[in-house]
Image: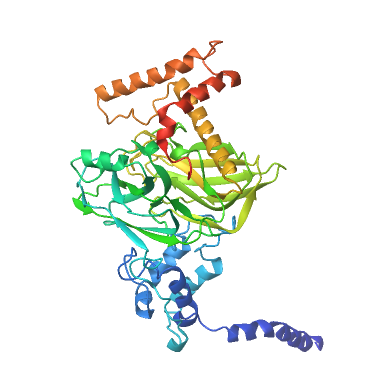
Length: 512
């Protein structure tokens, strides 16, 4: 019929743009598509001398791993970035888009063509050694410490004289583990009293022992853990180091089945300018969840812990960080503003103990006084969890070792005044005191993380007696004998807790 050629011509006309686009679509090549992604997202770690197990710095090295790269990018194992995509905008986001991920499988399917070598971008300059450049001062442990092949995790403090003859401001700190295989995380403190030197001198081994012992004597200034990338403090912020300070580095060592030694170093980058504004951290719950009452039954696939903290003063937050151990699964924090609106600050559905991150907000976020921070942390203590360090699974409570658990989500916050900062610190102390009261009234063995199946009967008996001694003053304040403290009864109870040495000695409420 006469209209059929017309329809056929019209169909061809309609299909022509798509056919033309397909004809013009070039194949995926290393030089134009793959190299820009690998060089900017992978090569910093995957190069000689860094933590990546193999190099990805040229066509041949990437081609050899093409199938593996397609697999680990598809399941988002690599590049390591564990905040859920599309929820919060972060300035240091290393994650790939769906379109970028598809390029790797398309390249593999096409036979991994190189393309025009002249179009391959130049490999970014990658610094060896100190990533922030040569430090103004390198503080190294005076002696190497021997980490045994087996045994429980070790917490050791090392005193390093800084010999500063004037007050100093620091814009960046970079940690270099002597043996990264055994260094799990570290905390930095400053001592201006000489107490750390005295304790170090009394201990025959390098440094001196204890996780929280004497922390109240020192001033907390931050820390480092696996995956932390060194960067200069943003927005003109600085750490303050008084003249005559000694650096006290608390190192958490994890034996690896082979005896080794560690002699780590800390590099300081100094500034001629003081901090632009007061700033600190807001940890929820405080002190790594020590008083959260974390108690995870063996085999429980999703154990949920929740915590909330209401900010007492206006502040502006610029980054968020989460911390847990091997059982961690989901780490989430949201903010509910005084007007009732909410927004995510962190949403991580695939926590990875081996790669912990400071997530820097693309734009600073203002949190007015009265903003409520809600935290959810989940843990997988089942046999199906490949990261579970205990097989078969056992009950896990709060504790400092990697086979124990902890949990916290921490904001970095800027204040307009020192008074706002101190008011926030005090609110965190009160929050922690309330948690401690709750755990003591429960008679919880998780209060101090001391009563575990692996300690002897004598130690368990001692810990139980300590628990009862700590409970007694609180029970005396239970005037109506209902086995709980009312708001009025809590006022003297909180004062009692805050006057004691325990919370003072925790040291890591925030930057003083």
